[in-house]
Image 1 (tube, rainbow, N blue to C red):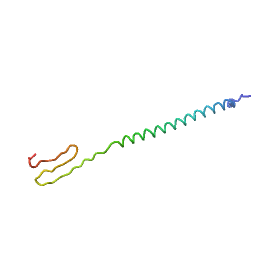
Image 2 (cartoon, helix red, strand yellow):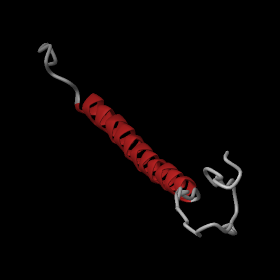
Image 3 (cartoon, one colour):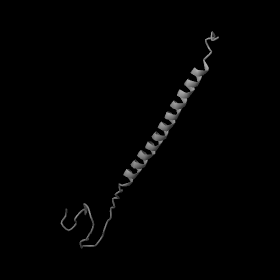
Image 4 (spheres, rainbow, N blue to C red):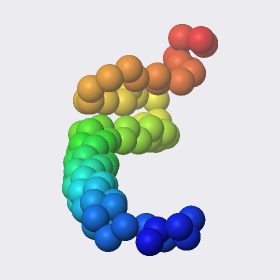
Amino acid sequence: MMDDKSAVSFAAYESQGARLERANKRAFILNIILLIVLLATNSAWIYYESTFTDEVKIDQEVDTGDGDANVIGIGDLRYGEDKANGK
């Protein structure tokens, strides 16, 4: 009855189909999990990078004549050349 080498029994065909359905379901679930993890890590990196602030260096020249210029601010201040003391 089954002398043909290409013939497969119906039970073997059905069991193979059931195994493939389970494998496809697992692969689909794995893809959904990986997509969620990808979105979570990307959003975490975006949040992490948005916590930094950009500092802007501002150079400002002040001409007060012969007097001193009072500067109020935070950080290192470089006043440039001191014409009164010749530095």
